[in-house]
Length: 158
Image (cartoon, rainbow, N blue to C red):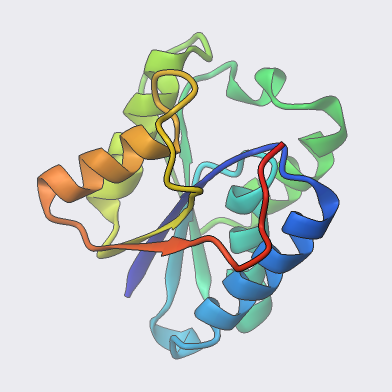
């Protein structure tokens, strides 16, 4: 089973704990030998999911939206990004250079195309910018990839 992830970044600490627990619980539902997680490794749910997949014994595939993607992530996340990317069995790129909203959406479209199922850490609201979680969910629904929304009770987004 190839499971992709999309989700909101910058979640407050209490929500992070709720989401991490929900992602870990969801990952444990898959046999580790059959699980491949697909992630762009952004800070937040993308990385939390990737860590949960690897901790469970699954495989990880990474989609890099742009050559300069890492530079656009928070500096404090670079070590985690590098560690997870180095743990990937496959890395897919878009061919784009600059880390723009368009590149992020292109990466998400590739991610959805690689996935049998998409997990979305999503509050159900519209995207705050092109390529946001709502846009990725809409794309998955358009192309027929099943989506499971993860938004635990008590979760908030600034």
